[in-house]
Length: 430
Image (tube, rainbow, N blue to C red; front, side):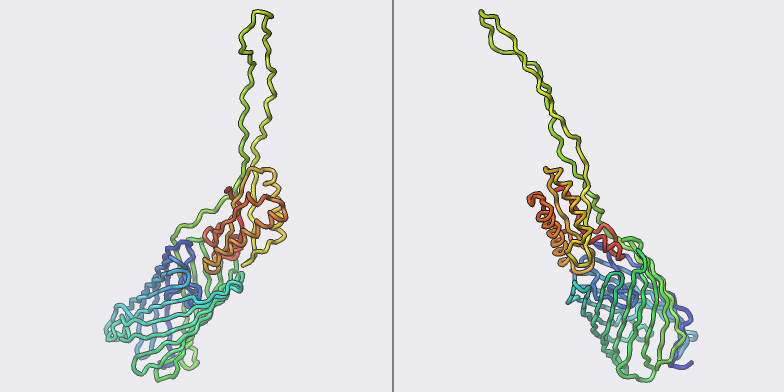
C-alpha cells in the first residue's frame, strides 16, 4: 500500500480521569493539560487541582509493514497557583506486526508547562504560553521511541462568552532526530453549552513539517464530540474524528473516542436562604399584691393599702422573614431592575426588624482568576449596600460586606445556567 496513505482499521480510546480539586472543576485533554479532547485550553487547571487520567487506543495501520499498535497513556496534570500548570504523560505501547516479533514497553513521553500570562476578564479572554518536551523514555531499537529530546513552545488563546468557549493553539516543535524536519502544530476547538449539562465540542488539529522528506506526511484531524456533565463530580464524553495525511490525500482514517471524567473534591454546601427572627422580649414577671412593711402605730389604726396590678405588656410573636438573593450579569456590578425590586422588599423587612444586622456576601462564577473574582464579589456587595443605604434608607451600621468570590458556588460552574446563578449576593446574619 502507498506510503502516502495510512489505513486505520480500528481505533478506540477510553479515558478515565480522577481529579482532586478544591473547586472540583478539572477538565483535562487526552494528552494531559486542561483542554477539550486534543486541543489545549489557555485557562489552567487551577490552584491545588490534580488530575490523573488514563486512555487506551488500538489501531491497525500500514506504513511499510501492516501492524497493530495498542497504546495506554497515563497523563498527570497539576495546577500550581491560578496561572501555572504542569503535565506529563507516559504512554505504554504494544506493537504487533503481521510478520516479525512483537515489541512492547514505555514509549516516548510528553511533558508540558503552561503559564497564563494574560487574562482580560471583561471580555472573557485568556492567553497562555506553553513549553513542551518529548521525553526519550522509549526504546529506539524496539520502535518505541526516537532516542532524542525534542523541545517546543506554543501560544494558547481562549475566549469565553455566555454559552460558548473558543480555543486556539499554535506552536513549533524542534525535531532533533536525523533526517526529520521540524514541525508546526496547530489546533482550534469550540464548546457550546447546548443544554443545562451538555456541551457539544468541535475540534480541528494537526501538524505540518517545515520541509517534507520522503515518508514524512502532514497530519490533520477533525473531531466532533459531546461532553455531558454529571453535576460537579464527573462527566462522560464521546467523539468521532476523521484524519487526513500525505500531500492532501484523504486516507480512510476514522476515529471513535469515548471517555469519562470522575471528579473528587469537597463541594461547598449551598448556603440556605437565611430566615431572620427578631429577639423575643422578656416575659414580664407577675405582679403580686404588696402590703406595707411599716410597723402599725397605736393610733390611728393602720390601713392596709394594696397596689393595683399593672397590665402585662403584650409580647409580639416572632416573625420569620426571608431575604432573597440578587443576581448580576457577567462581570457586572450594576443592579438590574429585578434586583432593585428584590432589594426594596428586603429593605422593608429589615425596617420591620430594627434589631437585626446583616452580612452581605458577594459571589461570582468561576470564570477568571480567583483574585479578580474576590474583588468582583466585594464590588457586588458594596453595590448592594450603597443602594440599600442611599435609596432605601437602611441604616449603614446594620450592613457589613464581605466577598466569597468563586469559593462558594451554589450551582455547578460547568454550565452557563449554573454560572449565571452563582453571580449573586446573599444575605446572612452578621
